[in-house]
Image (cartoon, one colour):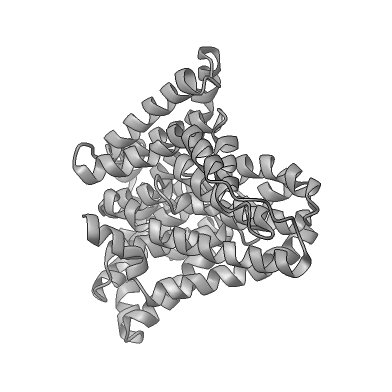
Length: 426
């Protein structure tokens, strides 16, 4: 009875649009009150804080700060210029430029929404001047923006690693393969649509321009190299790599690109602190929520039920894809990971599925969820930045989502796409 009332309280608050951290925390306290476990209620606050007080979790605010420092500079414009010099000579090249720039910027910011906003604000005016349908370009931005949570540094990968005690270094590397796969699929789709509708003009390709723009963007692109290289070489832990990246991003913005001033730093620190606090508050709520699930043996029961009814790892992965994809349509990646990873990972382990691959697959599902209503964060960002109505944008995003789901199925059946680089380097 208590478990039923706990579920009713949790989903009822979600239905009323109560923030998920509050929904998990309050429903857990309500459960403790119903069971009469007043001792646990007395230590709720310390347990809430203990969930956030983790060395691995410290990487999250540092990665967020690193991305905000570079986003506040001119990194997005430099990365777009670099992408344009490389693929802008293709027919309908602006769609390819948008995708490649999102991949580059994702490797700098680690955030899907930040990538869509930064790249979209620069690309949208150029798309209109070049005769592109803004709805089409907005759909490409909405789909390519989530590549930012696949290509390292990836905040959701860090969240998954901390929540499941999985190697964060391997997880960051595992996101590269899916990110490149999705990027290539979007590039070919964009070229096909552009050629079909006659969008854009064919520009000339110049090696000198490629070299020049690459030199200018070099300092920004060095950020993921420092992170991945430091972790792989053994010089840094993921948290230490995040700290180095934050300091490096500040130096680049203040002294190399000189697009930041010391008076800009307090506002950037405040923005990063607010973003970090939102994630950490969710983590604290999940500690209480997870205690209730563990006490009621929900993970064990779910694992037993899956093993009794599912006979193959592929079938389990397809079911997990559907569950996580739907979850990604309803909530942001970090809360979805914290909520579903502890539930599904025991069953994945029972099927001998690598936890690193399962983490990459989960984040890939959630990246697609960022483009799919009703939550669809990057979809709303692209709609706002490109000044396109959601009605027009959804018509263009539908075939793109179908394409991304096809890529998800390819990743599900061919795990080596995600695991090749971690196996090679780690």
